[in-house]
Image (tube, one colour):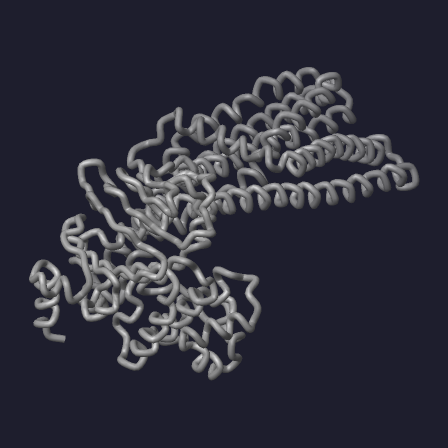
Length: 590
């Protein structure tokens, strides 16, 4: 998801504006209601001005008492009440429209990111994605809640007032007609500069969010290398740049508001001066003059409001650039949803046929990968860091698709199988499993939400997790913090294993779950993995060579190729790459 450093091309801005408009079709009903109520409020403004003019004229000019104007006062109170109700309805319906659009866009963003898969997400910056999903979508609210309704009201209300004013005083009507276009004209002229500043501001915010998020995730590493203070200075420098750019945007926003208010005030003053001279010369009666003067500020108010809300449009376009970038992403490695049906009557068999993969066309990660993984078989992948072990497992999980060759599942090309269908047959246990905020029960049932408590307890027992779960304050209902806060590494691994047992998948992809654990936790997890490996296919990414002895076959990867394969004894006797790696591993001090 590349970030543009220069100004946004005009064509791109127009395209984003069209995209924002297209999303309004989701909420046509509440937006139409907001505009309709706003139009009624505009008509009530005209009635309010007429009643005020009648009352003031009757009392101040004609000398009538309260008894004469009392009926008009009641009507005026009714107009005030109706306008208060209209204002509440406009705010409620506009907010409802914005909330619906935000919910729909955020839901689609989540679904799209999930469809792109971990292969794509791994290449993105977490802070950037988080900023887009949270702040970026929130920035669209004012566009739908304020700008779109106001843009339509800025046409209706001034025209309605002009239709009433022109027959009453054609000179004032002519002044309104001439000066009204100046406000949106200057709004657009000033807005062009502010638009570029807004876009640059959103890019700075995205970079700062991504960098700060990365710094937080790597805080332990920064502390270990005594680089935390230097990183804090970098974050402070970025925050100061963001503050400076924010002030630049605010300067333009205040300048535009000042100019719009000046133009509106000048136009109202012109009308007031002309009416004042004509009243002084006796060319105009007090009642129509006051009526026009009361309507003059209301004539320019929708135009001023539209100028104010124009900044909401610019902010929305800046945020939409990142959102649309994600929606337009169709990663080459992202496989389409297939419709092929797997033969579930046969034992699972996965065949890699001359598989190759490259993230970049001239930099292959895997080449000529050929092997078969059958039901009841355990295959271990070993190799140096960067040899392609993780990429191979991503291919097997279906997160990415081969650049060349085929992966067949029971004779069917994996690319032709729907992701949802394939992932139902697969359980993935990463080296650092993720636990989410919720109860222990919720976390175990993550992949099978409908499982009953008896099945959950059995899965926990098989994973050697039942004992410590029962010892928790609320047992299976004990709430956990994000990432399993409150549990040890071994307990987190056993809950993840319980997930796999509960899902009862035909294929398990395991990223050596017993690494970096104490001996007791390692023993419990090893026992659980032995149970899990029975009667199913298992692919193990091995980081410690002592753990691959139980594998039926070991694949030794080197620079993206399988250079050796066989069981532990065979490879050790061959004296090749595996034997060298094992000797080097054992000679390394622990």
